Image 1: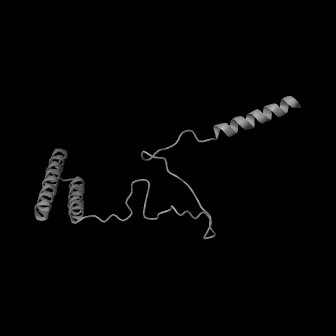
Image 2 (image 1 turned 180 degrees about the vertical axis):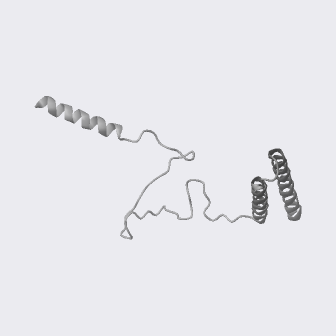
Image 3 (image 1 turned 120 degrees about the vertical axis):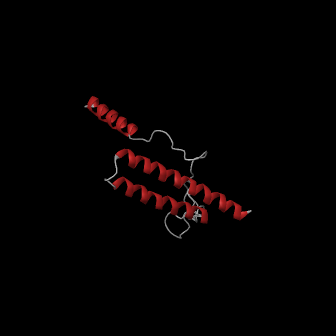
Length: 123
């Protein structure tokens, strides 16, 4: 009986130990602090909680600049053109690849022009 009890105890202890988390995932150079302070304002209220701060590096209030919007528009337009060339089956494969390469070069040139003009207007 004593042996059976020790076997059950050791198996349960082993399963409890293996179920524990191994290691700490560090997102930045510091470990996150999880603290809660109950003062009757609600369960788990923390005076250190800031809804506008994310420890994972995401900025919740990010608004894209005019340059970002222009680049996104150009990229979207050229992605649509490239996809239509891929679906255009009357061209041979080499002609389609050449046309796609040309469209990608045009896209990159147009993005570079927009960046240059945007920075010229700022200064």
